[in-house]
Amino acid sequence: MNHDGPICMVSSYPPRLCGIGTFTEEAREFIAKANPGRDVVVISHTDGAGEGVYPIIDMQRRDWWRPVVDKIRELDPYCVHLEHEYGL
Image (cartoon, rainbow, N blue to C red):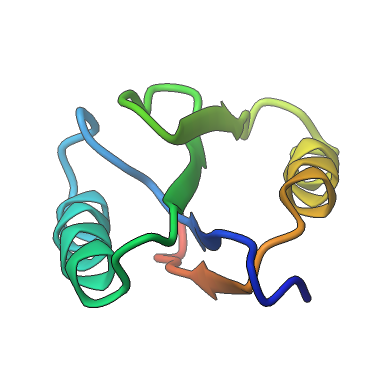
């Protein structure tokens, strides 16, 4: 854990149309406002988009989690926030 690292969210994210993605977008905005000076990044499914969004979750891959773990290690975040809905 890096005390100066970003907050990292792992979730679906817009433009994907789903409640979890919308929640994550809004939570990210709130967390960023409450933590000025700290980046808030998102690791999302391959259809996620935007600044600070890493669209690398490819559910077609059996080892979809490996790139996620690698990216989290690379980012060395302050914390990781996971949002999940079964089937996404």
